[in-house]
Amino acid sequence: MESTGKKHLLFVDDEANILQGLQRMLRMRRDVWDMVFVSGGREALQVMKQKSFDIIITDMKMPEMDGVELLTEVMKQFPETVRFILSGQMNNETLVRIVGPCHLVLKKPCDTEYLIYSIEQALKLRHLLGDSHLRAIISELKSLPSLPALYLQLEEEIRSPMCSVRNVANIISQDLPMSAKLLHIINSPYFGLCSQVTDIAQAVKILGLDTIKSLIFITQIFTSLQGDGPISDCLEGLWRHSLNVSSYSRKMAQMLQLSTYEEDSAFKSGLFHDIGKIILLTRLPEVFIECIQMSEMDGIPLFEAEFRIMGASHAEVGAYLLGLWGFSNPVMEAVLFHHRIAESGCRERNGVPIVHIANILEHRVNVQNSLVSVNQELNIKFLQYLSLYERLSAFHDICVNQEVKRKLY
Image (cartoon, rainbow, N blue to C red):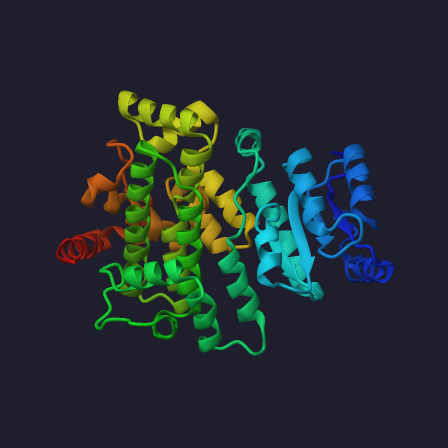
C-alpha cells in the first residue's frame, strides 16, 4: 500500500446519487481515509488489481454483478480485504447467499455514525492484529467463516422498530434443531435456572436478547465447522469448555458486582474465547495438531507452542474474526489477551482478567475438556495489582460447584 498512512476504502454502488451521498457523508474522514467510489463490480475488481484496499463496502443489488458475486471474487482474489455489504432487504434467500463471502452486513440506508463506527472497528482491528504472521495464518484459511444466517436474521429483527420478544422467538423457533439445542443448554447447569424453561419466548425473557444471540452464534459456528474422528472429539471438549468458561465468567462478574453490560461482555468473552482454536482445528488441522504435540513434548502452554510454530496464537485468530464480525472492543480484547493479560494494559476488573481466571480454573477443574495436559499459570502479580488475587478461592468454588451440578444433571 501507499505510504501515506491513510487507510484505503473502496465503495461500490450502481446508483450515482448513492455514491455522491456516501462521499458527502464521509467527507470529514478524508484526512485519514483514502476513499475510492466506483459504480459496478467489474470496475471494482479492476481497481483492486491496481491498488490494495483495507475494506470494500458494496451495495447488494446491482446489475451484471451483484454484491454477493463481487465479494465472492474479492474473497478469492484479495482475501485480506475486509468485506462489507449494504442491503435493504434481508429475506432468507438473501441471508443464505450473504453468509459465505461477507464479513459484516449493514442495513441500507445506514446512518453516518454507525457506518463510520463499523469501519473504524474493522480498521482498529487490522491495526491491532496487523502482524505478518497472523495475516499469513488468515490467508492460509482461504475462506473465513461468516456470520451465521440465523444470527443475521436476529440482528435484522432487533434493529427493527417493531422488534418484540415474540418476533425473536418465532424466528428462532423456525429452526427446530437450533431451538431444541438452545433449550437444552439453557436448562443445563451452565445457567443454574430455578425452573425449567419450556419455550424460546420464555428463554428470551429470562436471559435477554444478547445472551440468546451469543448462544445461537457460537452454536452455529460449532455446527458449521464439524470434523471427523479425533477432531470431532476435540470440538466436543471445546464446546463444554466454552460453555463452562462463559458461565464462570458471568458468575464472577456478578460476584464482583459489575454492571449488566460488563456482565454480558464477560459472558460473551468466555463463550468466544477459544473460537480461534475451533477455526485452526477445522481449517488447519495438521499445523494445529503439530502445536498440540509440541505443547505436550516441551511442557509449554498451547498458545506458546502456537507462537513458536505459527508466530501467532488462537487468541489472535479468534479476536480477528470477532472484530470482523462486529463484536465490541471489550469482547475482542478479552479474547485477544486471555492468555497474556499483562500485555492488555487493563486497569479494571473487567472481562480481560475474568476470562483469564475462568479459562485457567476451568482447565484445572475439568481436565477432560482440555486439548493438552499442559496448562497456563495464573498471572498472580497482575491479579494482585487488580485486587483479584484474594478472590481466587471464591472463584474456584464457583467452578467446583458448577461441575458438581453438571455431573448430577
